[in-house]
Structures are given as structure tokens and as C-alpha cells.
Image 1 (cartoon, rainbow, N blue to C red):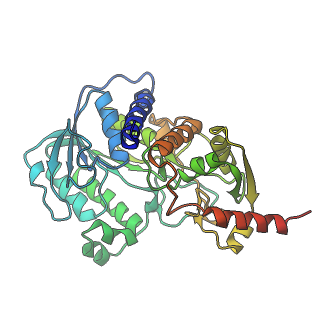
Image 2: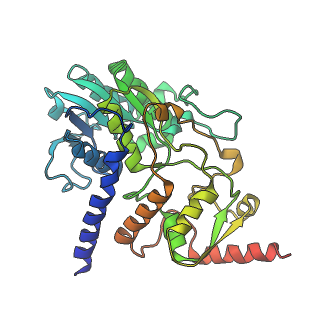
Image 3: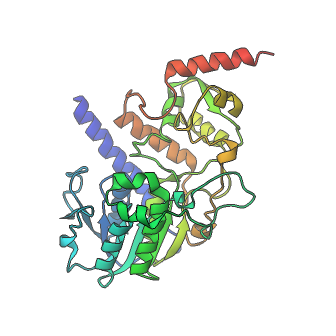
Length: 374
């Protein structure tokens, strides 16, 4: 079988197999089945969007997409796709249309969210805005967890007015997302579900901010493990987030919810242990101290994915979403499925944005052992 055909085959098999547990994960086991709904997705062709669309289809809902048609244009040939551009204000295709719910996965500019929500306010029952925990601004060790009532970051009105393109919004990403939340709620008060995820991971994630670990550990050998083994980490599997999004629509869950894991505390050691258990390749984890990594200019989060130094960590409380029905699959499943997807899609492609180059890792390990000889 040619490489391209084999890759397409593996991808289609993975998509079919990995979407199966998604439906079972939606909401509570005893929750009644929702009547079919008409759902509009703003975006829908990159990472989170496709997982949500598959979940909605699996539950019998009708999905319509609205986007520019530039990202993965051939992905959804069986769906109605409306063309437009929020940056230019072209919402013509949405005029006169009615939906049970709209899912906004592409809102970064307050003016764009305001325009869309106002246009659909009289013809749509539920507006779902995918926000971010970055709305909270600064993070760090604190005695209390971050909850939905924690103050959000602010941005001056003149900066908000000057932003019209997504690329212009990135320097003020968190505060502008908070303004987007407010814009949606102002247009459709009491009918908005605002979801604040943290790091979204799993099959299809090309950011490599999580994928690096399953792939690196699968390659075997000695691996640098960063900082405190007991240091806590939080992330959400994209399929669990998609399931929760659909649950909110089906059961009319509104309001603000933090949606980054988990049921209980999870440590870096537990995550890396799950990665180690997902491979049969011999591997050794060598825990290098936070001080050593900082002294050698190893950058947290990108060069050492998931790792956040002690003074930058915060616990984001997800108990509100959990009480309303959110569920998380075992981390081992996320690791296994992400690794399978990466092998099918990435192959031996090097990581350009995350992780340490192999030679750099070897140098650091040699230096660590030399400085810590007993």
C-alpha cells in the first residue's frame, strides 16, 4: 500500500475508533437523550471543531458550519457549509437563518463575537462561547484555587477598539477573550454557556504541547523529567471537551465553567508514568531539578511541555462543571490514543516548537549526572 494511502487508511481507522467512546462520555449515564437539534458551528475544521462535529452527528444532531473555507476545505463534504468572514464583517450567509444553538470556537475579537451574537439573538436559543483560562491573567502558587468567580484580566478600551484581526488579538489574548465572553452575554443574556478550557490535548493536536511526551518516551532511552515529580498538571482531552460542549447544548447548561481536568489531583510523575506504560520501548526517566533546568536556560511549557515551575502554578477548580455532568476519560487513554495518532500522522517528523533536541537533551543529562555524583 502506498504511503499516502496507508496514512489515509490509518487516519480514517483512528478517527472511527477514537470517536466511539466519545458518545458514551457525554454527560451523566442516566441523562435522557436529547431531541435532535440544529447546531451552527463557527469554525469547525481545526482540532476541537471536528471532534465536536463528530460527537453532534453521533447523537443525531444536524450541524451547519460557517467559516471562510480556507482550513481543511474538503473535510466535511456531507455538511451544509456557509461561507463568510468575521474579520471583514461578512455575515450575510447567516441572515435569516435559525438554529437551536451556535458554537463559537473562533471568537477572539470582541467586535466579531458581538456582531455574531446580536445577529443570531432572535433566531438562536443557545450561544456557546469557547473561552480560555487565560482570562484569569496571572497564575502562580496561591492558597486558594482559581474558580469561575476569580477576577479576569483587563484591557483598555482603546486597545479593544484597535483590534479587528485574530493576529492582532494575540498580544491581549486573555483579556480580549474575557471581553468576548461579556459581548456574548450582553447580546443573549442568560442563554450563553461560556467554557474556559486550559491546555486542550489528544488526537489531532498539532501544537505538540502534550504530544511531545508520548512520542519522546516511546522513542526510549534516558529522558529528562522536569522539576518536582509531584508537581501538579492540568489539561483536557479534546474529546472530553467536545462531549461537555454537546452536553451543555443538549441539557441547556448555561453560565461560566472551567473545563480543564481532572477528578482529583494529577502529578507530572503520574502523566509521564502513563506515557511510559504506553510503550514497550525501554526508557528511563531522570528527574532534573527546577533549579538545574533554570540555570541551563531550559524554558518551561514549550521546551519542557506541561512543566510549569512552582511559582507559576495554579489550580483551576473544575468542580462546577463536574457537578453539572462533565466527565474525564482515563489519562492512559489520552496518552495511548495521542501516541497512535502521532505515529500515523507525524511519523518521524521532528518537533519544531516543543521539546528539547536530542543532542541538547544528552548534553543536559551528562551535565546533571556529573553535578550529582555521589
